[in-house]
Length: 67
Image 1: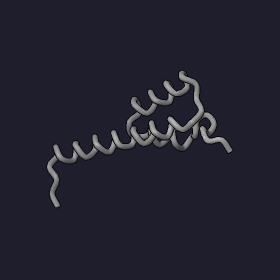
Image 2: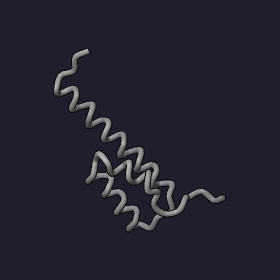
Image 3: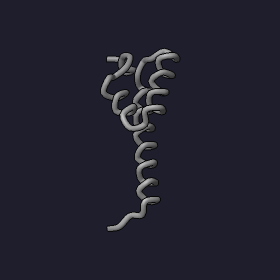
Image 4: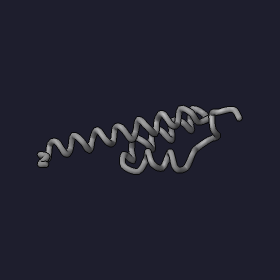
């Protein structure tokens, strides 16, 4: 199957947006201060390829769930 360069760029951008959304939804469930949430959110946005993975892997703050 052949994809044009424009189609590949579109899929790449959609994947990056999808990863950023997953990481942002993950951050919503963590107990963070506003400043911590802002810093982690900026990491997601400014490091588009590795930022979402780092946010989920490093697990900032404590879990929002009550045990």
